[in-house]
Structure formats: structure tokens, C-alpha cells
Length: 319
Image 1 (tube, rainbow, N blue to C red):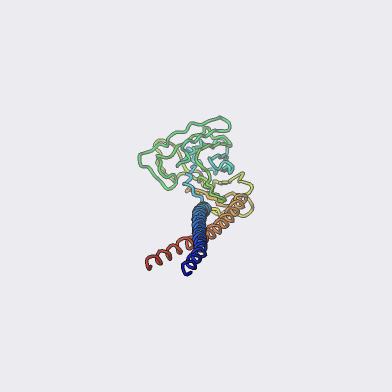
Image 2: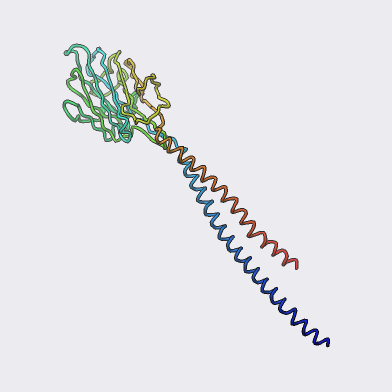
């Protein structure tokens, strides 16, 4: 009787144990699937995190750059002989050709026809590299190295070895010269733009130029320098030297024999690009938010993946 009861009991318990084992296997399989799913999600979260951080860093880093440009060089105006009648000089730099330098230089003589001398135009610095100068009336003018001794240097021209000159003869009532140089007139970084215009100056008194007969422009010479055709969306921030209000990017002064500013700088903002930059900054902020969410997700998944495994190992070692 006892034997029969034990056999019946075994028959009753065995299916239950078998079902429990099946349920344990199913649970283990579900846990393993969940573990693998979380690992896959962790990989996705890490990819999103890395891509978001890199993208936002690139956008913010690019937006933080500022335009920079080298010294633009100088254009020095001189005369032959010892004329004392002041002259008028106007220089117009084309703001649309910011990747190069295009300018029109007009020199107007005063006095009687017999008092007019030859005009000498000296160009120094990077501006003279690849430069071409044409007279509006007579055509291209040949550039020549500035004569003198090796090592000649002064505060107006700089290193004389980096200077070239042209002579316009005879000096008519007005000389109009057209300049074309591959030297960049401006630098653009994102929405900001910086113009650097060559200084319009003259020689220091008694500047040694070998056998070249050249004298500073006469005292009382008037100079006007202007940046023309600036981009329509350009908004001025600052100018060195400062300019008068009135909408013109222009400098006017009466010069003495010692010359004038050695460069003119204008900095400002391109408003159309500023809108684009603001949009990029907004996008960068959104991406940074995505990166933060991906980081939280990755931390949660890491905790869900690795903490149970660690507890399981501790339980196994304790047992």
C-alpha cells in the first residue's frame, strides 16, 4: 500500500517538477534575450552619445573662430623734384572682391601745368606679390624693384626689399591707376568679416632710394580712402582708424609730409550668415540635449546589464 502511494506521489510530483524546470528555462531564456536586447540598446546609446558629442563640439568650435588677416602692406605716393603744391589722393577698394585686392587710385595735381612732376607709386608688403598696375589712359605699367642698399628699412615702407614701384610720366592733371593683387582684402569666419586695407602713405624725408629721385608728397595733401561695394548685409562693428557716422566706410584727412595710417581695418557682421550661425547654435544645443539623454540611457542600461551579473557572481561565490 505504501509502495503504491509513493509511486502515485512520484507520478503527481514529477510533472510539476518538469513544468517548473521548463518555466525556469523559459525565464532564463527570456532573461538572456532581455540581456542581449539591453546590450544592443547600450551600443545604440553609446553610438548616439559619441556622434552627438562630436557633432555639437564641431559646431560650437566652428562658431567660435574669429577672422584673422595678415598685414595688408602699404601704398606710398611720392613725387620727383621738389614740388610744394598739394595733391589730392583718393583710393577706392572693392569690398566685393574680398578674396583678392582690387582698387582704383586717383591722384589729382594742383598748380599750373609747368609745376606738375612725375608721380611715383611704391607698393610694399604682400600686396606687391603678383600685383598688376594699369594706368587708365596708357595701359599696364611695369613694376620695378625699389632701389637702395640691402637691409634698408623704415617705419613707413618697412623692408625695402619687399617693395616695388611704378613711375607715371609726365604727371598729368589726374592719374588714375587700377590695382589687381591676389592678396586677400578680407577674412571671413562664420558670420564675421574683417577687412584690412593697405595704408596710403608717403616717404619719410630723406628716405634713401639709391638714384631714384623721389620726395614725400607736399604738406597739405588730402587723402580719401574708401571701401566700396561692401556686402548688402554687412553691419559695421568697429573701424581702425575710427570713421565718422553717415553710412560710408570712408576716411578723410589732410596729410603732412610724414604720411598717414599704415593700414585701415573694418570689422563687422554679415547678417545673413549671422542668422545661419544662430540656427547652427540652436541645432548644436538640441544635439547636446540628445547627447545628455543618450548618456542617461547608457548609464541606466549599464546598471541593468552589469549589476545583476555582479550580484549573481557574489551569490555563486557565497554558495
